[in-house]
Length: 254
Image (tube, rainbow, N blue to C red; front, side):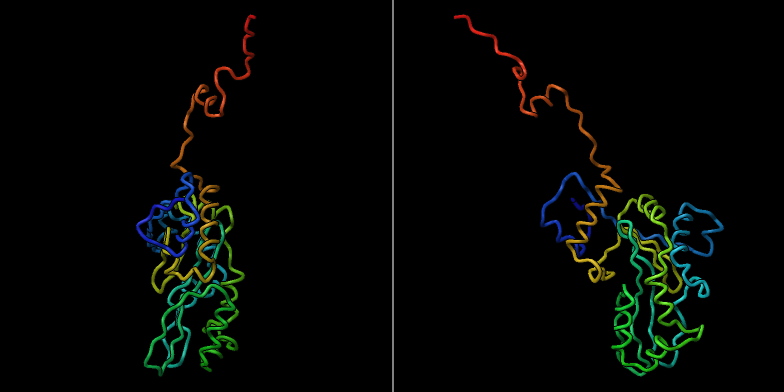
């Protein structure tokens, strides 16, 4: 697969195995900012695909559009900056962008991307904070997001149907796009830079590159390369035949 892009990503190392010129991935990043309060009323061209995202995020309706955001408290807590799903080659990878916020600490942890419930369990345990541990593992308050809610996100919320997901891949003309809810925003990111989303935690660069190559050659196809017409005469010579092929040589008179 040949990649045409203005930026580099972690899986570009797969190019070292050779390039198939018949498969081209034009990788141009684009961000579509959507007002989720108006889009269903206005019925824009993005409505169907936004509804797909809503199907994904409908796992916990009691928190409506921003289920994991709440005001900072004077305690330690899990600070969630955004959450969403990364759609890659017909598969869905839920994620949250979060960090441990310690109330009395002078230092701020960096946000990181979490793609599995096990990794989130580990982050909470390593925080060594009684407040965070209790909220996550033991709290049953409807105002506190606990492990059950995150389990719904990571393991039971894949509500986008495969055909609808493929339709969105074709609509966005990309093997990769992201539905992401921020604190006040909803974005569709087409051809994202995956290293910024720490997706190397999920797929190694070679597997990632192989998946992209197969999807581009299969589902999306290659719109750049068209069949080249070739005459029967040229095709004959190309296959190694000549004018005397399949003909008997005339016998020479003695």
